[in-house]
Length: 145
Length: 135
Image 1 (cartoon, rainbow over the protein chains, first blue to last red):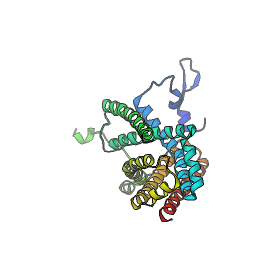
Image 2 (image 1 turned 90 degrees about the horizontal axis):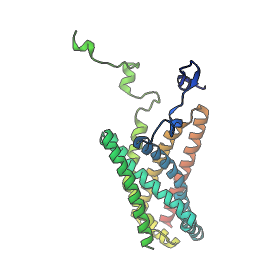
Image 3 (image 1 turned 90 degrees about the vertical axis):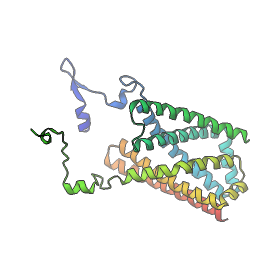
Image 4 (image 1 turned 60 degrees about the vertical axis):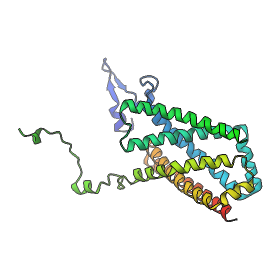
């Protein structure tokens, strides 16, 4: 037991035995069911950190271009490889999700769409828009050859 | 009994001066929250511009990339994108790290390292765009 928060999570069961009660993230799957609110919230963080890692690619792309022809050709070839395309697919999926859910967060900040039914609707809308935008991006990317 | 006696009230254990300043325990008030929204709003059009740029530069060779970045509008918008993107990343990573790292010394060390890496990435990106723009 490290601090007050964990100390408060200790209780006694019906037999009077001391038990350590589970704290929320570790209840996922056992006591927590899927919720639009928590799922879209943690996805916003996961995609945010993922996009942070993706900026390494963004910087590598720009630095290679500034370094010269051979470096840029190498980076462009790596991005066009199957591994590169998979990483870019994850990047665009994360980007469109974070973009759409970010708009949802900004709407909440001005007090819009915060009621539970509206929150469930706009959460589903964000997921649908993410899929549509990602598919549209890759269709256009392959069409322009 | 007047309504004043029964009205619910909250007791904030903070001095009137502290409440008026509204700076809270971090001594910065809502500044971090506000700049995170500012960079988020700035990124809405800039990210759309970036997506269009990426599609236009798909499979581009070095000459095409250099010519694109040398266009004044592209130089300006890429610099704006870099500024908004890396400040938003810095603000977001700070919130995430502050939430999940409990030990003070570890949190401060990781925060400084992550902020340093983000600052270096931002500078490298910025200088690269400028080099492409002016060569």
